[in-house]
Image (cartoon, rainbow, N blue to C red; front, side, top):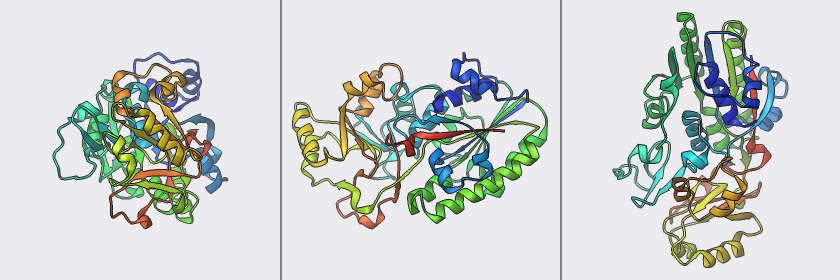
Length: 373
């Protein structure tokens, strides 16, 4: 069972016209006959992290199963899969940073801005990066998305929900108040998607094993428990995460900048994410790049060619489409559990490096909970 199996089962329960496989049918069997379907995605809340931080919580006690995150285990990849019903081998988004070869641009995916100059107008169109059709607008009945006010009106949010209704929140109290209003308004068929991003942000800043992360998750758990006691008999509620996180020590963060020797072999700065890093190599330089990378980082990372990834079905059960091959590049480096990698500005301050990271294939990042009540 993986994230997309959960997403498909929820979509089907909300009225989506798709066929379910065996795993998705088993998830669907957990749901009751209710008109309203509430899907809550808590960004960064991996199953292992939930067990470690809040072992006796309401969230932990209602885990019905453990699923696999999609790989790369990072938000842009998973949210695009949620919107489209496609694995990254098809939807082609490879992480937070995407290199668009057609326009020779490096783009930060979800904000959809130039990676190195947010004020610079992009040549690439949103639909060239997020090229698949979204499926929320195909649901019968009402469809609503609740997300932080800072992102609910973003180009990606509007695209992903198919221009259905979006409601912003500034506090968790506001988020669950909006959720309650939508539930209480009527008993018509409705799909409500609540996306909570603050936990992931806290884990990045302080570390996934920090007291700050535990307190944030404790707060979320309190709001979910109060909501559940009031509405568990009125709606189907499904909660999961997009990925987990691992703590990375500052000294275990590899960085390169524009002056690095490796950049002479690349078409663009490394893309993807900090623990699954994508490299677009200049023609005729693949062997030289492979030798240089392995001499530096071979003890800490697996360097896979796009052909090897295709054979391994690493980013989806089917073959990698041509567009995805362009986005993922010639090689991807999978860092071990203790290390991360980042392309930085020439004057970058190491103190600004994140304490929590994801996108790798460790169990901490790849195990996500399936919570149903």
